[in-house]
Image (cartoon, rainbow, N blue to C red):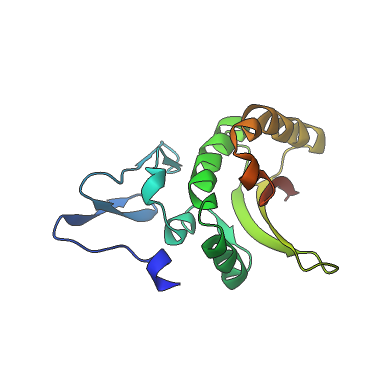
Length: 155
């Protein structure tokens, strides 16, 4: 678990501070910038780790979510991309993002859920989620489409 959640330290590694977060840059390849609201933008997804995801998503059960992501590391870059897509579709109308693993009691299969917390009226939130599904979901590789889902959590 530690190998996934830690950075490889080299002489060229430096720590950069942004509002509300600290990012580790290695050889200038891992970059991020924040918009005016302090939200993360333009991550180098190839270097993303579970620890980085914690800065963007609330893990409802840390062990369960991190174990799932270690079994499916190909989801990590998609979750960073999804964060930008959610921001594009929901703008300032979401309060947070959560990751939760649901386990089917009958067969024990698991699936990761990305929950978008919003106070939008139900119909508006559903319309925005559907627009996200229509525009972004087809770009997700089929193999990963069965590993996670996106839903709205009303607050």
